[in-house]
Length: 340
Image 1: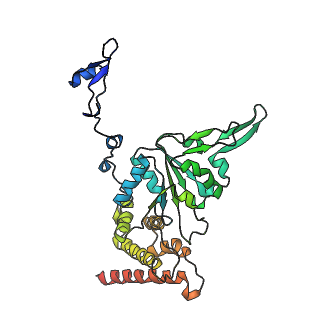
Image 2: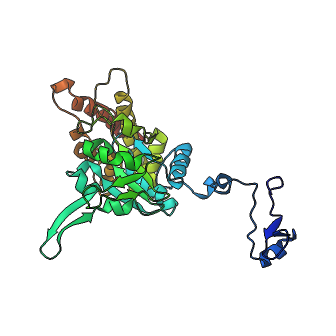
């Protein structure tokens, strides 16, 4: 009934009027095999997600709103492009979000793709017994799996031909892939619930990347990954290896101080360095600390090589060394004064 949003009658053969009024008692409806449905709710309202039931990972820091938006787009089968500096966790959080929703992730590293057509469509082969035949790619089978998360890693490093192939696949209306190499050129439709998540590095320091075509960019919602704050960095580093007694808390605080100053300099109006320190690099440093390396040794191995030593005393590496020595000297002096 349009007016009351209730089932009032059911068609029955052999009746003069063609229908029979049925009782409002739900038990009577069930015995007749009639499904009871609340017609007052729209399909969207029935599919409302309880976000509190999908907790954020304990070993990763992401803004509550961005976590909720990432989950929502995966559930709705939407496309997301995750941008941010290298090592900030774009790929990692994709796997964690998919795991939280019990979704399968199928990974494609487009930055390492030398032949886009074979990777995304397939190859034609020849057999002495059967002659020429076409072998579909893993990507073709992946897009036909409902509710799958397809991770297009390093999209900004992909060959432009890969972008052209993906245009119809990523389009929210078209959502298909044509297999031109196959004899009958079939059209493969993207399955329901498939979500495409791409990662991209955007900025002049990423020299191997390409400026992404605007038409391709419009097929994604952009999700910018944030660099961790000082407090978040410390909490992550200390929780990642749980037992803080393996590493002195002062050492972790000193590391966070150094990273904070370097990142602050990169964002200044006239930066003296051209790149920053990723969270991935700080986690590697802590691994060295747990393996009995000193903080100075870990930084010398993992941080200094990131910065050019051209220019002598005015080089980027010299500046970073000055930042490091400032905090290491301060930390050493503090321990000397605190000793009995």
